[in-house]
Length: 449
Image (cartoon, rainbow, N blue to C red):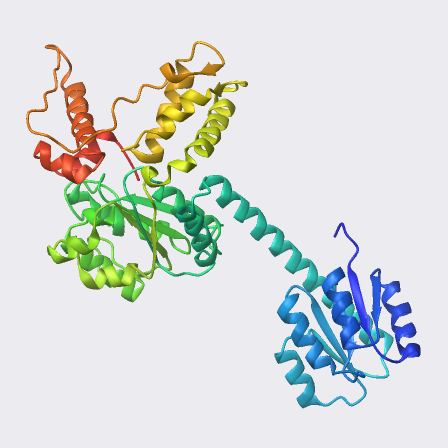
């Protein structure tokens, strides 16, 4: 390691303290010393030693009490106990309570050296893990940009839950960053070296979704010219992100529930069960409780996937974060296009911060990319950001003028975008207005959450 490790020696016998100091220095530690529990605590809390070697018998308390205090305040430190009255029972108790070793006095040099080298390895591992956690936490901070209390709570929850295999249910409007949350949970987890497999339940046609999820054997259905593993198999030992799970039909929900309960899948056209070890992260922008009440979503499946629930706020509820997001996206775009020096005027920033953003963060990013692509110079002003009015609730009599000869694909796109604008980005309402399913809107726009 780059830094020399600090070691605190605690013993009220000056001769013993001096002998231990010589042995420890030979192993490359910087030595701190104390002759009582009170002094040891003061030194430890000031200098944060990596390793502590303490005698059990001390004038003002015992080494066990000191170890308890250090483990509470300095959990990364390794604590070693020395005693002139060793016993197997006390040694077992000490190790159970957190000591890295329990050594009998008088100290045998070879025994102490072996213990020190083991402690050094443990400290190195802890420091490496701490550095990794800090780096990943910084990535969460960079990816989920914002200082609003609601987004800060989301970040804290991600950091707490990522290390477990707990199922996570992410809810929020389209464009709020649900897929980003799933990616961060995976990257911070112990499964990060394995695959993160994403399934858009709204974008895949209903008749193909079961095959995509569980795979199929050759000849299982018309067009199945070869065997194909499903997303569960591909995510084995990794993470499966089920995007827009609220769009999944109840029949398939029942099969998904069985897989989550049993940890086994069966490909279409096969009677063979295959074990799968998968961490599930689900997302939706529909009100699942309402879907359950309407009979469109299974209550038992919801309880299975809704272990930890994350609610992403819409951008209109954290407009104070718009300046940070603008700076973040501008930096990303500058790196992507290999340009520099482009900045936004205060007046333009005020305009962006006063908009309600029906498409949320995704819309803001698209607006930034468009403004940079069409810029006249290095300054983006009010006129560079074409937002239109903040959409209001849908009204009867809304008209959309489309020129004769416009390609049908463009007509569909304009109709969908107009409906989304009238419905403040709510795909369910827009779909109802157009007489189509929200699944069709996702497919036409080629969107993922």
